[in-house]
Each structure stands twice: as C-alpha cells, then as structure tokens.
Image (cartoon, rainbow, N blue to C red):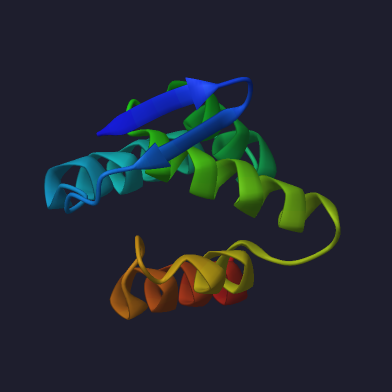
Amino acid sequence: MEIKLGKNKSFYILSKISMLDIALSMKHLGVMLRSGMGFEESVKVLSEQTPDQRIKNAYVDILKKMQSGKNLADSMKEHRDIFSDIIISIIDVGEESG
C-alpha cells in the first residue's frame, strides 16, 4: 500500500509483493522477447504497464541502468527484494545464450 504525503513524497506500508505479480511480469517479458522486442524496449513497456508500484519502480531503475550500459541480469541484481536469484540466473543465461 502506498501513502502519498504530498509533492513527490510517499512511503509504503510493507506488504509482500505477490508472487503472481512477479510471475505475470516475467511471463509478459518472455512474450515480448519472443515477439522480437529487445530487452530495453521490453523493460520500458513493463515499467509503464506494471500495476504494482514497487515492481514498476524497480523496472524504471533497471531501465536506467540498462541505458547506461549494464545488462538486464546485472541491473536486476540490485532488486533482489523483488526478483529472486533463480529469476536473475535465468535472465543471465538467456542473455548469454541469446
């Protein structure tokens, strides 16, 4: 739950991020990649369309890191509170193998 405090200030009452939200996010990423979209473009779409604000914020940060030269897996490592090591490893293998 997000509480707005005023101009650009908010905080979260910690609640667990739904595994379903993460799974759907990964499914959408896979669909976009299989359709021929690149990693950056796919992450941009996810950052715009993900309903959970914490996941959305993570994707915005991941996109910035990718635009500065990091790959997707390395960018996701800074968000281990959202993305598990298994997810990050799968992304890493996918990036390595093409």
